[in-house]
Amino acid sequence: MSMLAELSQGLLFNIILLLFSIGLLWKGADFLVDSASVIAGRFGISDLVIGLTVVAFGTSAPEFAVTVSASLKNQASISVGNIVGSNIFNTGFILGLVALIAGIKTSRNLVYRDGVFMLCISLLLLVFLHDLRLDFYEALVFIILLILYLLYLFIKREMPDEEIPHHKARIADYIILPLSIAAVIAGGHYLVDSSTFIARSAGLSEWIIGVTIVAMGTSSPEMATSIAAVMKGRHGMSAGNLIGSNIFNILGVLGIAGILRPLSLARESLTSIYILCIMAFVVLIFMRRNYRISRIEGALLLLLSLISYLIIFAKG
Image 1: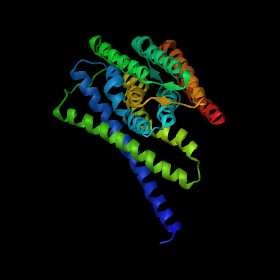
Image 2: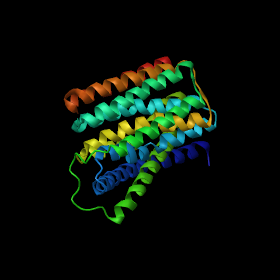
Image 3: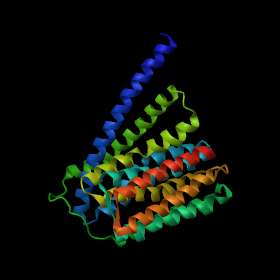
Image 4: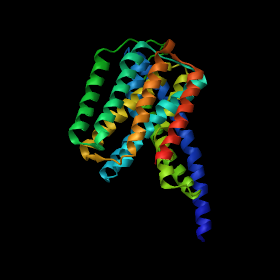
C-alpha cells in the first residue's frame, strides 16, 4: 500500500473519529447536566455549587491529563500553556458563545465569591510566574487554596436557587453521573487526537496545533456541558462549570504539576498570562452588570478572545 493511500485511510478514519467524539461529547454532556441537577436537588445543593465542583472537575480531566503528562516529560511550556490557553478559551470563547446563544443569569455569589476568587488566583499565577518559574512551595500554595475554597463551598453551601427536577434521585442517576463524566472526558480525548492528525495532514505547524487544537480540544467538555446546561435553563451550572474549571485548572492542575516538577517558562509566556488576567477582569464586570451576561456582552467576549489569540500568535 502506498504512503498516499495510508495517509488517505488515516485521514478518513480520523474524520470519522472526530464526528464520533463530537457526538460522545454532546450526549455525555446532556446526561451529565441532568444527573448532576437531580443529585443536587437530592442533597439540597444549588446547581452553581455542583457546577463549580463535580461538573467542573470532571470536565477539567483532559487539561489535567495533558498538563501533568507534560510536566512529567519536563515540557513546562506545554503544561502551563495548556492551562492558560484553556482558561482564556473558557472565559472568552465558550462563555461568550453560551451568552450569545441564550444570555446567562449570574448571581451575587457567582460574582463576589467565585468570580473575584478566579480573578485573584489568575493574578497570583502572574505573580508566581513573573520570575518564569513555578516552584514546589508556590504549587503547594495553590493546592492549599483549592482545599480551603472547596471546604468553604460545602460548609457555606447555599440552597438551590433554580428549579430542581420534580423526580427524586434514583440509583441510576448516581451511575449515570460518573459514566457521563467518563463519556465527556473520552470525547475530549478523541477530539484532540483526531483533530491533531487532521491538522498535521493539512500542514499546520506544531505551534498552531498546540495553541489552538490542544487548548480548545481539552476545553471541549466544558463547552459541551455549558451549552447543554444553559439550553436546559441551568444557568448556575453553565457559568459555574466554566468558572470552576478555571479555578481547578490553576489551583488543582498546575498545583499538582508544579509539585511533581518545578515548571520553567520562556518570557513570551507572560503575554498569555497578562491576557488571562484581563479576560478574568472583563468577565467579572460583565457578570456583575445587571447580574446577567447579555448576548451583546457574549459577542464582545468572542471578539476579545479572537483578539487575544491574534496577540498570542504575534508574540509567539
